Amino acid sequence: MKKDYLLTPGPTPLPPQVMETLARPIIHHRTPQFQAILKEATENLKYVFQTNNDIFIFASSGTGAMEAAVCNFLSPADSAITVEGGKFGERWSELCTAFGIKSIPIKVEWDSSVEPKDIEKLLKSDKNIKAVFTTLCETSTGVNHDIKAIAQVVKNTDAVLVVDAISGLGVLDLQTDNWCVDVVVSGSQKGLMLPPGLSFISVSQKAWKLIETSRCQKYYFSLKAAKKAWDSVDTPFTPAIGLIIALNESLKMIKKEGLANIFAYYKKLAKATREAAKALGLKIYAKEGCSSDALTAIEVPDGIDAEKMVKTMRDTYQVTIAGGQAELKGKVFRIAHMGYINEFDILTAISCLEKVLKEMGYNFQLGQGVAAAQKVINA
Image: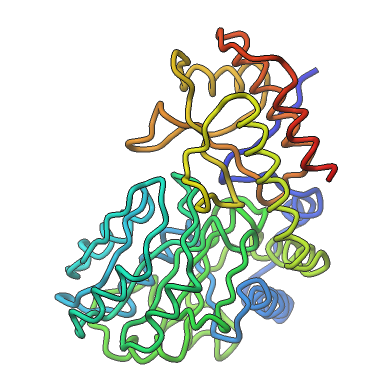
Protein backbone atom coordinates (compact mmCIF):
# COMPACT_ATOMS: atom_id res chain seq x y z
CA MET A 1 0.00 0.00 0.00
CA LYS A 2 1.42 3.34 -1.04
CA LYS A 3 1.63 6.53 1.03
CA ASP A 4 2.98 9.82 -0.28
CA TYR A 5 5.39 12.07 1.59
CA LEU A 6 5.92 15.64 0.41
CA LEU A 7 9.10 17.40 1.53
CA THR A 8 9.51 20.01 -1.18
CA PRO A 9 10.02 23.71 -0.40
CA GLY A 10 6.57 24.49 -1.72
CA PRO A 11 4.00 23.24 -1.92
CA THR A 12 4.13 21.75 1.54
CA PRO A 13 1.67 19.20 3.01
CA LEU A 14 -1.80 20.35 4.07
CA PRO A 15 -3.08 19.75 7.62
CA PRO A 16 -6.39 17.85 7.85
CA GLN A 17 -8.08 20.93 9.32
CA VAL A 18 -7.12 22.93 6.25
CA MET A 19 -8.24 20.21 3.83
CA GLU A 20 -11.60 20.07 5.58
CA THR A 21 -12.20 23.79 5.04
CA LEU A 22 -11.36 23.42 1.34
CA ALA A 23 -14.15 20.83 1.03
CA ARG A 24 -16.85 23.12 2.42
CA PRO A 25 -19.55 24.61 0.16
CA ILE A 26 -18.44 27.94 -1.27
CA ILE A 27 -20.00 31.18 -0.06
CA HIS A 28 -20.38 34.52 -1.82
CA HIS A 29 -17.60 37.01 -1.24
CA ARG A 30 -19.71 40.18 -1.10
CA THR A 31 -21.42 39.13 2.12
CA PRO A 32 -21.02 39.91 5.82
CA GLN A 33 -20.14 36.24 6.40
CA PHE A 34 -17.11 36.37 4.13
CA GLN A 35 -16.11 39.86 5.25
CA ALA A 36 -15.86 38.59 8.82
CA ILE A 37 -13.55 35.77 7.70
CA LEU A 38 -11.46 38.12 5.56
CA LYS A 39 -11.06 40.57 8.43
CA GLU A 40 -10.06 37.84 10.89
CA ALA A 41 -7.59 36.32 8.43
CA THR A 42 -5.98 39.70 7.77
CA GLU A 43 -5.60 40.39 11.49
CA ASN A 44 -4.12 36.93 12.00
CA LEU A 45 -1.68 37.58 9.17
CA LYS A 46 -0.41 40.59 11.11
CA TYR A 47 0.52 38.20 13.92
CA VAL A 48 2.60 36.05 11.56
CA PHE A 49 4.13 39.07 9.80
CA GLN A 50 4.79 40.58 13.24
CA THR A 51 3.43 43.92 12.11
CA ASN A 52 0.70 46.50 12.61
CA ASN A 53 1.13 47.70 9.02
CA ASP A 54 -1.47 47.27 6.30
CA ILE A 55 -1.58 43.79 4.75
CA PHE A 56 -3.30 42.95 1.48
CA ILE A 57 -4.14 39.58 -0.08
CA PHE A 58 -3.99 38.82 -3.80
CA ALA A 59 -5.26 35.78 -5.69
CA SER A 60 -1.89 34.91 -7.21
CA SER A 61 1.33 33.06 -6.55
CA GLY A 62 3.96 34.82 -4.47
CA THR A 63 5.39 36.37 -7.61
CA GLY A 64 2.23 38.47 -7.89
CA ALA A 65 3.02 40.16 -4.59
CA MET A 66 6.63 40.60 -5.76
CA GLU A 67 5.34 42.38 -8.86
CA ALA A 68 3.09 44.56 -6.70
CA ALA A 69 6.14 45.44 -4.59
CA VAL A 70 7.91 46.77 -7.68
CA CYS A 71 5.18 48.53 -9.65
CA ASN A 72 3.51 50.26 -6.68
CA PHE A 73 6.56 51.94 -5.16
CA LEU A 74 8.71 52.90 -8.12
CA SER A 75 8.59 54.73 -11.42
CA PRO A 76 10.33 54.07 -14.74
CA ALA A 77 14.00 55.15 -14.62
CA ASP A 78 14.13 54.91 -10.80
CA SER A 79 17.07 53.01 -9.32
CA ALA A 80 16.82 50.04 -6.97
CA ILE A 81 19.30 47.61 -5.41
CA THR A 82 18.54 43.95 -6.06
CA VAL A 83 20.34 41.23 -4.10
CA GLU A 84 21.02 38.38 -6.51
CA GLY A 85 21.96 35.38 -4.41
CA GLY A 86 19.92 32.75 -6.23
CA LYS A 87 17.11 32.20 -8.70
CA PHE A 88 14.57 34.20 -6.71
CA GLY A 89 16.91 37.06 -5.91
CA GLU A 90 17.41 37.34 -9.66
CA ARG A 91 13.64 37.60 -10.04
CA TRP A 92 13.73 41.00 -8.33
CA SER A 93 16.09 42.21 -11.07
CA GLU A 94 13.88 40.74 -13.78
CA LEU A 95 10.80 42.45 -12.36
CA CYS A 96 12.56 45.80 -12.15
CA THR A 97 13.68 45.48 -15.77
CA ALA A 98 10.11 44.64 -16.83
CA PHE A 99 8.92 47.99 -15.44
CA GLY A 100 11.78 50.09 -16.79
CA ILE A 101 13.48 50.44 -13.41
CA LYS A 102 17.27 50.53 -13.23
CA SER A 103 18.40 47.49 -11.29
CA ILE A 104 21.68 47.77 -9.40
CA PRO A 105 22.46 44.13 -8.64
CA ILE A 106 24.62 42.87 -5.82
CA LYS A 107 25.76 39.49 -7.10
CA VAL A 108 26.29 37.16 -4.16
CA GLU A 109 27.83 33.70 -4.36
CA TRP A 110 24.88 31.34 -4.23
CA ASP A 111 26.18 29.52 -1.16
CA SER A 112 26.58 32.73 0.84
CA SER A 113 24.56 35.49 2.49
CA VAL A 114 24.76 39.10 1.32
CA GLU A 115 27.02 41.43 3.30
CA PRO A 116 24.94 44.35 4.67
CA LYS A 117 27.98 46.61 4.25
CA ASP A 118 27.77 46.10 0.47
CA ILE A 119 24.23 47.44 0.52
CA GLU A 120 25.29 50.32 2.74
CA LYS A 121 28.12 51.24 0.37
CA LEU A 122 25.74 51.47 -2.61
CA LEU A 123 23.18 53.51 -0.67
CA LYS A 124 25.85 56.00 0.35
CA SER A 125 27.19 56.29 -3.18
CA ASP A 126 23.79 56.95 -4.77
CA LYS A 127 21.24 58.92 -2.75
CA ASN A 128 18.65 58.45 -5.50
CA ILE A 129 18.21 54.72 -4.87
CA LYS A 130 14.59 54.27 -3.86
CA ALA A 131 14.39 50.61 -2.85
CA VAL A 132 16.42 47.61 -1.72
CA PHE A 133 15.00 44.25 -2.83
CA THR A 134 16.23 41.11 -1.10
CA THR A 135 15.12 37.70 0.17
CA LEU A 136 14.74 36.26 3.64
CA CYS A 137 15.32 32.67 2.56
CA GLU A 138 16.59 31.92 -0.94
CA THR A 139 14.58 28.83 -1.83
CA SER A 140 16.87 27.76 -4.65
CA THR A 141 19.94 27.55 -2.41
CA GLY A 142 18.82 27.04 1.20
CA VAL A 143 20.59 30.27 2.24
CA ASN A 144 19.30 32.86 4.72
CA HIS A 145 20.01 36.59 4.53
CA ASP A 146 20.35 38.70 7.68
CA ILE A 147 17.29 40.91 7.29
CA LYS A 148 17.70 42.51 10.71
CA ALA A 149 21.18 43.75 9.82
CA ILE A 150 20.10 44.87 6.36
CA ALA A 151 17.17 46.78 7.85
CA GLN A 152 19.53 48.65 10.18
CA VAL A 153 21.42 49.86 7.11
CA VAL A 154 18.33 50.90 5.11
CA LYS A 155 16.08 52.41 7.79
CA ASN A 156 17.89 55.75 8.05
CA THR A 157 17.93 56.33 4.29
CA ASP A 158 15.16 57.43 1.92
CA ALA A 159 15.06 53.95 0.39
CA VAL A 160 12.53 51.31 1.40
CA LEU A 161 13.48 47.72 2.24
CA VAL A 162 11.43 45.09 0.41
CA VAL A 163 11.80 41.46 1.52
CA ASP A 164 10.73 38.31 -0.29
CA ALA A 165 9.60 36.09 2.59
CA ILE A 166 7.72 33.64 0.40
CA SER A 167 9.50 30.59 1.80
CA GLY A 168 10.40 32.12 5.16
CA LEU A 169 7.21 33.57 6.60
CA GLY A 170 5.97 31.57 9.57
CA VAL A 171 9.17 29.52 9.53
CA LEU A 172 11.91 32.04 10.37
CA ASP A 173 11.80 34.98 12.74
CA LEU A 174 11.02 38.14 10.75
CA GLN A 175 10.18 41.04 13.04
CA THR A 176 8.74 43.39 10.46
CA ASP A 177 8.00 46.34 12.74
CA ASN A 178 10.78 45.91 15.30
CA TRP A 179 13.40 45.67 12.55
CA CYS A 180 11.87 48.47 10.40
CA VAL A 181 11.21 46.33 7.34
CA ASP A 182 9.04 48.41 5.00
CA VAL A 183 7.53 45.80 2.70
CA VAL A 184 7.23 42.02 3.12
CA VAL A 185 5.79 39.72 0.47
CA SER A 186 4.85 36.09 0.88
CA GLY A 187 2.79 33.23 -0.51
CA SER A 188 0.42 30.58 0.73
CA GLN A 189 2.02 27.24 -0.20
CA LYS A 190 5.00 27.09 2.13
CA GLY A 191 5.08 27.94 5.85
CA LEU A 192 1.36 28.77 5.86
CA MET A 193 0.40 25.18 4.91
CA LEU A 194 -1.99 25.99 2.06
CA PRO A 195 -2.23 25.23 -1.66
CA PRO A 196 -0.66 27.76 -4.02
CA GLY A 197 -2.91 30.66 -5.00
CA LEU A 198 -2.62 33.41 -2.40
CA SER A 199 0.03 36.10 -2.03
CA PHE A 200 0.42 38.73 0.67
CA ILE A 201 2.09 42.10 1.03
CA SER A 202 2.60 44.31 4.09
CA VAL A 203 3.22 48.03 3.62
CA SER A 204 4.79 50.51 6.06
CA GLN A 205 3.94 54.20 6.29
CA LYS A 206 7.32 55.00 4.74
CA ALA A 207 6.47 52.80 1.77
CA TRP A 208 3.03 54.40 1.36
CA LYS A 209 4.75 57.70 0.58
CA LEU A 210 6.36 56.11 -2.46
CA ILE A 211 3.00 54.73 -3.59
CA GLU A 212 1.71 58.28 -3.91
CA THR A 213 4.44 59.17 -6.42
CA SER A 214 4.76 55.89 -8.36
CA ARG A 215 4.19 56.18 -12.11
CA CYS A 216 4.48 52.51 -13.05
CA GLN A 217 1.43 51.06 -14.75
CA LYS A 218 -0.65 48.69 -12.64
CA TYR A 219 -4.23 47.50 -12.50
CA TYR A 220 -4.87 44.17 -10.79
CA PHE A 221 -1.96 44.65 -8.38
CA SER A 222 -2.76 48.27 -7.48
CA LEU A 223 -2.28 48.82 -3.75
CA LYS A 224 -4.28 52.03 -3.94
CA ALA A 225 -7.24 50.01 -5.20
CA ALA A 226 -6.65 47.39 -2.50
CA LYS A 227 -6.53 50.08 0.19
CA LYS A 228 -9.72 51.73 -1.06
CA ALA A 229 -11.57 48.39 -1.06
CA TRP A 230 -10.25 47.51 2.40
CA ASP A 231 -11.93 50.63 3.81
CA SER A 232 -15.13 48.59 3.38
CA VAL A 233 -13.42 45.32 4.41
CA ASP A 234 -13.49 44.18 0.81
CA THR A 235 -11.23 43.36 -2.11
CA PRO A 236 -11.19 45.24 -5.43
CA PHE A 237 -11.55 42.01 -7.43
CA THR A 238 -12.93 38.52 -6.78
CA PRO A 239 -10.86 36.92 -4.03
CA ALA A 240 -9.89 33.26 -3.77
CA ILE A 241 -12.75 32.57 -1.37
CA GLY A 242 -12.00 28.97 -0.43
CA LEU A 243 -8.29 29.62 0.01
CA ILE A 244 -8.92 32.59 2.29
CA ILE A 245 -11.26 30.50 4.44
CA ALA A 246 -8.53 27.83 4.61
CA LEU A 247 -5.95 30.53 5.36
CA ASN A 248 -7.94 31.61 8.37
CA GLU A 249 -7.86 28.02 9.65
CA SER A 250 -4.11 27.61 9.16
CA LEU A 251 -3.42 30.95 10.86
CA LYS A 252 -5.46 29.86 13.88
CA MET A 253 -3.27 26.75 14.10
CA ILE A 254 -0.12 28.89 13.95
CA LYS A 255 -1.36 31.28 16.62
CA LYS A 256 -2.31 28.39 18.90
CA GLU A 257 1.17 26.87 18.55
CA GLY A 258 2.93 30.23 18.97
CA LEU A 259 5.59 31.67 16.68
CA ALA A 260 8.45 31.15 19.13
CA ASN A 261 7.62 27.45 19.47
CA ILE A 262 7.28 27.07 15.70
CA PHE A 263 10.62 28.73 14.99
CA ALA A 264 12.36 26.49 17.54
CA TYR A 265 10.74 23.36 16.08
CA TYR A 266 11.82 24.10 12.52
CA LYS A 267 15.32 24.90 13.77
CA LYS A 268 15.49 21.42 15.30
CA LEU A 269 14.21 19.76 12.11
CA ALA A 270 16.74 21.73 10.07
CA LYS A 271 19.60 20.68 12.33
CA ALA A 272 18.47 17.05 12.22
CA THR A 273 18.43 17.14 8.41
CA ARG A 274 21.88 18.70 8.16
CA GLU A 275 23.43 16.35 10.73
CA ALA A 276 21.95 13.37 8.89
CA ALA A 277 23.47 14.56 5.62
CA LYS A 278 26.88 15.04 7.23
CA ALA A 279 26.72 11.57 8.80
CA LEU A 280 26.24 10.16 5.31
CA GLY A 281 29.34 11.97 4.09
CA LEU A 282 27.31 14.54 2.19
CA LYS A 283 28.09 18.27 2.06
CA ILE A 284 25.62 21.05 2.91
CA TYR A 285 25.56 23.53 0.02
CA ALA A 286 25.20 26.71 2.10
CA LYS A 287 28.32 27.91 3.84
CA GLU A 288 28.55 27.57 7.62
CA GLY A 289 26.25 30.10 9.30
CA CYS A 290 24.21 30.76 6.15
CA SER A 291 21.89 27.73 6.19
CA SER A 292 18.15 28.26 6.36
CA ASP A 293 15.82 26.56 8.81
CA ALA A 294 13.18 26.41 6.04
CA LEU A 295 15.00 23.97 3.76
CA THR A 296 18.39 22.37 3.30
CA ALA A 297 20.24 22.14 -0.01
CA ILE A 298 22.65 19.18 -0.09
CA GLU A 299 25.36 18.59 -2.68
CA VAL A 300 25.00 15.46 -4.77
CA PRO A 301 27.97 13.08 -4.26
CA ASP A 302 30.25 12.28 -7.19
CA GLY A 303 28.99 9.48 -9.38
CA ILE A 304 25.34 9.91 -8.41
CA ASP A 305 22.77 11.05 -10.97
CA ALA A 306 20.82 13.70 -9.05
CA GLU A 307 17.76 13.69 -11.29
CA LYS A 308 17.52 9.90 -11.19
CA MET A 309 17.88 9.92 -7.40
CA VAL A 310 15.08 12.45 -6.91
CA LYS A 311 12.88 10.65 -9.46
CA THR A 312 13.42 7.25 -7.81
CA MET A 313 12.58 8.59 -4.37
CA ARG A 314 9.39 10.11 -5.78
CA ASP A 315 8.15 7.52 -8.26
CA THR A 316 9.30 4.31 -6.57
CA TYR A 317 9.08 5.17 -2.89
CA GLN A 318 6.60 8.11 -2.87
CA VAL A 319 8.97 10.47 -1.03
CA THR A 320 9.11 13.75 -2.92
CA ILE A 321 12.02 16.12 -2.41
CA ALA A 322 13.28 18.78 -4.82
CA GLY A 323 16.22 18.89 -7.17
CA GLY A 324 18.41 21.87 -7.93
CA GLN A 325 17.32 24.89 -9.97
CA ALA A 326 19.09 26.94 -12.63
CA GLU A 327 22.88 26.64 -12.24
CA LEU A 328 22.41 24.16 -9.37
CA LYS A 329 20.39 21.71 -11.48
CA GLY A 330 21.93 18.27 -11.11
CA LYS A 331 24.29 19.52 -8.40
CA VAL A 332 22.10 19.67 -5.28
CA PHE A 333 18.88 18.28 -3.90
CA ARG A 334 16.67 20.08 -1.42
CA ILE A 335 14.72 18.79 1.58
CA ALA A 336 12.17 21.10 3.21
CA HIS A 337 11.46 21.23 6.93
CA MET A 338 8.66 23.79 7.03
CA GLY A 339 4.90 23.89 7.15
CA TYR A 340 3.02 20.72 8.08
CA ILE A 341 6.18 18.59 8.20
CA ASN A 342 7.19 16.84 11.41
CA GLU A 343 10.12 14.82 12.74
CA PHE A 344 8.76 11.53 11.41
CA ASP A 345 8.52 12.99 7.90
CA ILE A 346 12.17 14.01 8.15
CA LEU A 347 13.19 10.55 9.38
CA THR A 348 11.24 8.94 6.55
CA ALA A 349 12.93 11.20 4.00
CA ILE A 350 16.40 10.45 5.37
CA SER A 351 15.65 6.71 5.43
CA CYS A 352 14.46 6.82 1.82
CA LEU A 353 17.49 8.87 0.80
CA GLU A 354 19.76 6.25 2.33
CA LYS A 355 17.92 3.44 0.54
CA VAL A 356 18.17 5.08 -2.87
CA LEU A 357 21.80 6.18 -2.46
CA LYS A 358 22.72 2.61 -1.50
CA GLU A 359 20.87 1.26 -4.55
CA MET A 360 22.80 3.71 -6.73
CA GLY A 361 26.15 2.52 -5.44
CA TYR A 362 27.05 5.22 -2.95
CA ASN A 363 29.29 3.77 -0.23
CA PHE A 364 28.22 4.31 3.38
CA GLN A 365 26.77 2.39 6.31
CA LEU A 366 22.97 2.19 6.28
CA GLY A 367 21.30 3.89 9.22
CA GLN A 368 23.98 6.49 9.89
CA GLY A 369 21.86 9.37 8.66
CA VAL A 370 18.73 8.30 10.51
CA ALA A 371 20.72 7.81 13.72
CA ALA A 372 22.25 11.28 13.46
CA ALA A 373 18.84 12.84 12.88
CA GLN A 374 17.35 10.91 15.81
CA LYS A 375 20.13 12.15 18.07
CA VAL A 376 19.18 15.77 17.33
CA ILE A 377 15.46 15.19 17.56
CA ASN A 378 15.72 13.36 20.87
CA ALA A 379 18.16 15.83 22.47
